[in-house]
Length: 232
Image (tube, rainbow, N blue to C red):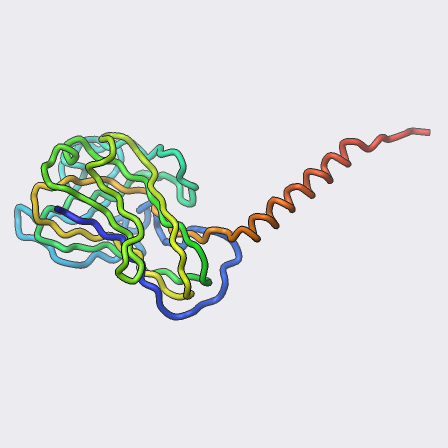
């Protein structure tokens, strides 16, 4: 089974975050000459013909790898539920590597404080990848402990879907956000990812303060609407 891993590793302390935002750089894979600015490729590169690695491809391309998804055009992400930290853009990340692995694509970001964080992304399974016999999963880990698993073969093909999960981080510090895979049965299923994010989830008390603030604003607006002006 080919496995993609999303690893989150916590270390030293940092300052508290002010507002929720995408803590990942280039979550839509639009920046840099190869679309991978802020990300680091690593791991094992297989020998030909199994030498394919994760690559950024343009939307609606009918080109073969590495210029496209082996001739199958991928439409722009339209998955419902993505908070939209990053715009869809012109391209997305294509996981296709069927070599011996593991290969990795990682990014390290600084967490502001302990608390609950949400990791998410949109994914699309090309039909040519969905029909491959090998399995494919993507797992998120915190200190080597899985907390969320996405299985490529379980979702429908040729449909953009949003995946997200929350994790509680007890210690502030640096987080390694890492996609990787290890292949055994090939060819394995492959998929496309876009609009990846890692963001702090407001605590209940913060939500209560925000909702209370919205209520006060609404009451003030109603009072303004009810004011009667009398001209002498």
